[in-house]
Amino acid sequence: MRAFLVPHSHNEYLIFSRAGRAFASGGQIYSMQWDPFRYSPTIAATIAPLTIFSDSIGGVIWRFLATGILAAGLLLFTSTSWPRLLRGRDQASFILLVLPLSMGNIADGQSNPIVLGFLLIAVASAAVNRWNLAAATAAAAALFKVYPLAAGLLLCLLYPRALVWRLAAALVIGLALPFLFQNPHYVSSQYAAWFQSFSSDIRWELAPVFSYRDLHLLLALAHLRVTHNFYIALQLLAAAGIAIICVAASRAGWSRARLSILVLELGTAWMVLLGAATDGTTSMLLAPAAVCEIIETHVERTPLWLRGCLITSYVLLLDTSLIGELVQTLSPVPYFAVKPLGALLLALSFLVIELRRFGVSAEPPVFQQQKTA
Image (tube, rainbow, N blue to C red; front, side, top):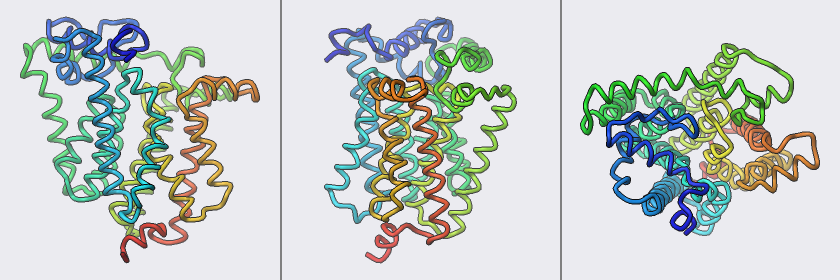
């Protein structure tokens, strides 16, 4: 209702509609200095048809689209990657616990629900051999924000014969799509401007309160100044570590359903903590993985301290300013560092949980029951 009645307040859809209109008219997509468009020309071309409507109507359609894709991802994930032994009540609890971390994004017209929906569909599809759908949705997520390609690459690492060429083809098709609707020279210039926008982003050099909400921010607040090259090395090192864990889990005989959850957990943790251009709203990408482990560790009777870490991180990631203000009042942590701190705690919890499972069995108990059912 707010998106329709007050379209110019708390409405990220305006960024997309401006880019869509610029693409349709042959204008500069990446010329905006404030609230710049950071997505690929493919997304601008895809949004262009919505611009025939006013921002009020287009914003409502955009939100329905985002909600639909996220809902489809959650339903497919719970029916494929999650053990089938879960009762309908458990699935409802899963979705209800995801919503508090997602509603702010949907209300403000963010693209994160769409990206997360595509990621969920990708990992769930890979679990049931739907390779074309997995490749298409992994590529779609990457065309919105480049760093979700990390999940696609992890899936390629686990299933190289099935996914490498499919994901490559999906990316090529997606990147070529704008050339069907505009002058090739114009589209090429927009791709050049898009690539240039990567190198011109200096937000990570700004004061912490204006910086991205990621690990770099936490390091700065801890007075650990790192160079840009060192941080890139840290990103690559973390990515390599995640890849090693995924390959080790595959060789240990983990099921595809379990591997899909592993990719979602570690992949989204890397995106939120170490991905490019992470802001406070990006933390919603962690929502399904966080809720998944909260429920699963309860079933497994995981040590209380570890379950406490998961619940604490969930609370810190809640999409409300009240949590940030409360933490800032009770501790030296500033409000803008609460979500990255929650993401770091959650990522470390994921790591401990998965490494413990290597020492216990190849599959968590709920997945072992699924095999014998």
